[in-house]
Amino acid sequence: MASFRYRPLLLAMILAGFSTVLFGIFYLAANSLPSPESSRWSLCVWDCGWYRSIAERGYDRMPDPHRMDANYGFFPAFPIAVLLLMKAAGVSFVVAGMVLNALLSLLFCWVALNYRSELNLKDDAEASVFLAAFLLSPWSLYNHVPLTEMLFNVATLGTFVFWRRGNYGAAAVFGFVLTATRPTGIFLPLILAIELLYRERHRLIDLALRPDGRLRALAVMPLGLAAFIVFLYVRVGDPLAYVHIQEMGWAHIFVNPLAVLATALITTATTRYEAAAFLVASAALATGVSLRRIPLSLAAFAWLTPCIALLSSVDSQPRYALALFPLYLIVPAMSRLLQVALIVMMALGQAVLVYYWVQSAPWLV
View (tube, rainbow, N blue to C red):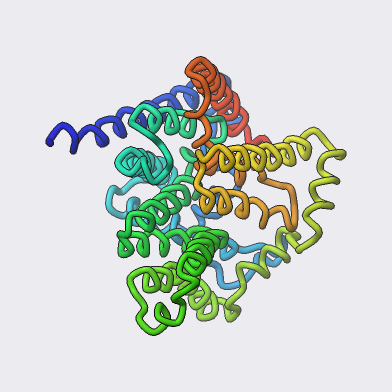
């Protein structure tokens, strides 16, 4: 009994620890080349700077008068968690963010190993292959640097597996964090609600008259988003300020996503790479569902999340489409030789992306 209890935790520590150490090695290797300022390359580039500004000085009250942007375009769960760690340990934002993501990686691995059946994983071996593919993929770079990706993945995993296991209190907590991490987090509660309504379609009136733990959990999950909306109304005077500042500061306006995708495929090498990330992820998710390797609700969520970004731009599609964990549930279905070859190649790819990340390569935004 004791060995069964501690085995998932031990495996989680090995997998999460190895991926974190390997990322550190990749970063130190990138630092073997001199930086323009004769110092170490920074890990906090691009959107990381916005989260650091939130943690260090709080949310802006108005946009920058020159750039017309503001940090309230970014959701609060991650910077709040980093701030708490900064205060508790007395470390910088970057160190706190890296430590937080390392701890979240451990939590992710433990939950995935402990509740692998909810992810259609047959045993610890399949779960370990999935975790290795996810954590060592090139785009797991975003799960290590001080960005929201790992928190978003952990919150998604926790919401889904605890919902499936009937632990609706835990699912509600993870769902609350999920919707407070990114606006697209709201899609998972919506998908779970649709799934519930379809399953209980013959007793909807009874369910409405006698709401159970499932409905209460679904009611709690969107409150992370709702709380941020209320905060923005008090702080800025606009409950949808996070949408409006994206339009004003980053020119993110809704357009035809098919036109965005088609244009990206014929424009530059960078836009083709970003469009290819969405197309590859879509094909892999569809394949995983057809093979019954990826639960339909998780696949739908992992597809809708990058779709929303595609409504305005192809930018950051690799980050939105390829850094989400459901995609990698398909890897255990491959042959052992292909699994090993793919994981090794992806780990080498992560080394390459780390090198370009610390140089602030624009195609890694």
